[in-house]
Image 1: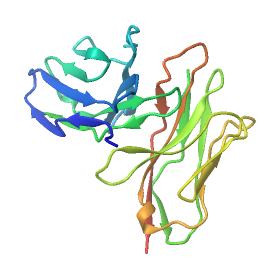
Image 2 (image 1 turned 30 degrees about the vertical axis):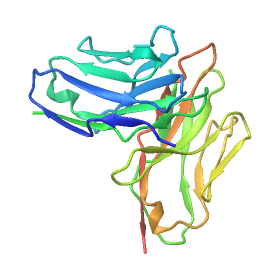
Image 3 (image 1 turned 180 degrees about the vertical axis):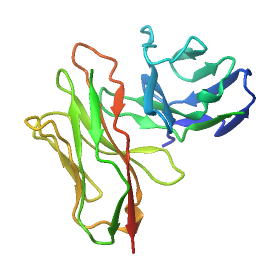
Length: 112
Length: 115
């Protein structure tokens, strides 16, 4: 079956611009996660959605970052006024159960 | 807080050599433990998992045993192949008290297998 998909696969943006990253989870998975992979910080948790519960935003690095999940399916991660330190690969994962997370291919964001 | 420590890479081996990548963790509660693999140019893939002490996860010839007494989850393979060349990440998640179940990752270990 189809895995987690993310778009775009690559995004180059100028410092100060806003960007939106999209994640389509595996159908039926109730939990959705965003992570960031960067050279300096490794793999970091950003935000978690579970069903209709309030999201866990504890990993978002600043108030320039936000995310939403519409209809319990597709999620969008928005970064406002991008900075060079936002350059990273942004990974989305979904999960049907408490233990296993399935990752998408990621969006490589480059801020120039 | 919870954390994962894994051995620094790169690890360079010849084909058919024995592989060990060390992973230790610090956690409150009773975490589940995972190994993820990232092949060149690809996303993270779950390699194996263990959800309680003394469980052994295994897949594709790789094994790891959840050792609570030593807080370790070392990855092993008896005979590596060139196709195993990738970055390996040890990770934990902690459901204790209804936590988010976010994954906490180690820094990753690059494995390079030479023919």
